[in-house]
Image (cartoon, rainbow, N blue to C red):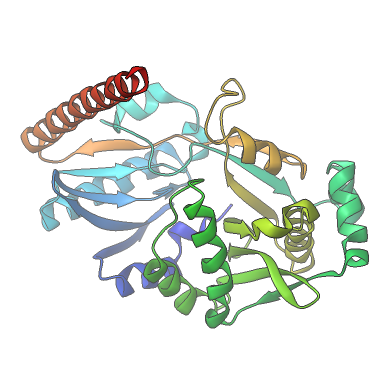
Amino acid sequence: MEHFLQTPLWGEVQRALGRTVVERAGSGWRYLAILERNALGTILYAPYGPVAKTPEALRAALASLAGEAHRLGAMAVRVEPVAAPLDEDVASLRALGLTRAPSDQQPERTWVIDLRGDEKDILGAMKPTNRNLHRNIHKKGVSIRSSQDPAELEILLGFLHATAARGDFTPQSDSYLRTVAEILMPAGGASLWVAELEGAPIAAALVYDTADTRTYAHAAIDDTHRRLSAGIPLVVALILDAKAKGLTWVDLWGIAPTERPDHRWAGFSAFKKSFGGHEVVRTGTWDLPVNRSRYAAYQGMRSLRGVVRSVARTVLSRGKALLRRG
């Protein structure tokens, strides 16, 4: 699967956002990496990369990344290697000098639908409710369309604002998503999918396309019409459209571990699994220190920040309890 985070178009998005982007390739490997700066230090990050065909190619890619990080003054390289022989081999990753990052940047687990069967097979793998909504939602006055006009992103932004106002999640900034849309949509790297009730939008989703994969990235609905469940036939439509376009995979992106029913992603993980498909577990996020003393200081500062936050949460919780008792 080719992930959009490792495509030249994504590099254009990052440059438009004012970020330094490094793209390199060699025998059996390639990567796109972004220089990320924060108060604790600078890291050269390759999201879902480098992409390597063999462990030897991965080693060469890491050497290239380390050289670029040193040139740019970064204290470490941050990677999420895509190399089939190493997908679940933690020992091999550690042998390359990698250490687990403080937290995963991109989801380690994702839900993927294989489009290589026929349409009947794809629909048959879905829950009956999903199939029925796909076939009958038009009877309720709902239609579904796609657009590659960046101006129509405002439909999705409105729904995201309303969802955030309910406290359900914190969306990425409008300016970020507008930049993504302005670059990717005209180039065919993204499209907006909209469900409309008698011509008025009630749900929307932004998807990203590569040569073989469509990724379901950002979505929200109008809570007023939640009972119509328009988000379900919308996803079915974008899946079948990806099949019609000759793509091989639809990546519904991050899901919660099955053994964590209390996970904050559990609800929408169940939603994604209702469309059929299978789980893909990636390597997770790893760091390769380039300047070891600075990286050690970075780890220490992160640990201290974690302790301070934990103490603050405890104090706040106890304060609220005292107020309730009073």
